[in-house]
Image (cartoon, rainbow, N blue to C red):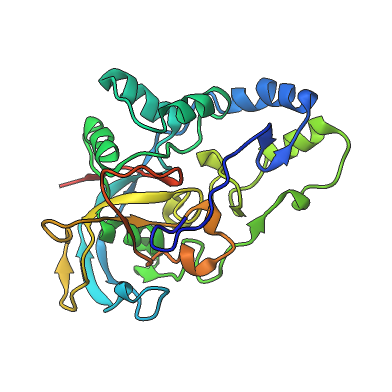
Length: 289
């Protein structure tokens, strides 16, 4: 999905595990093995040491990634994974929230409880993070966490994977077998070093620098900032414009993995904060000061 140039959305249908269509026996294996594995979803934040980095990119799909400008950030914490359907539904139940994608999330929570919460508006995402004592990450924090390694002299990479675009995963990578149990177990062991064309539970989403999952692919992520043009002067802990029409989205979704330019961690997407999209989720951040 790209809101400015909308890409087609295909809803998950049938019994599919990491892109595999399985019969009733494979489904029972998933219930016995996979759902136990996913019963407790990750709930971990990572400390990101602050520093300075060149934010933006001079040449991109859209011109709004320029000009490149120097940004300095204080230390902050950020979720290692996108917020899951299980976590968000617990919040929605406490707050008695109704929203367009609630039934979809309830269905997904029954068989894949660690899928990223999606179809969430910016306002609901920010409300969830505030309920955890946090907030959505700023646009600068998100890009820094996705591309800069503070342990390597604050070197900025082209991708969350480094300077090489990661390999794509598809079902053909598993050995062909008529044994559905073996096929399901192989899918469950899918390494997070691959980008996946399907929506996957957060531990299987791509693992990048700083130990963060899902900073490219899976779902787009809301960030704190109103959308606006970059400035060329250095900034310290920028918060974005004081007001605006759109909020910024980062990271791309599983729909975009065939188009690396749309997963560029400097790319800026945008949407109205009250809108809901089936391929948009979020993660939370915390200031440490």
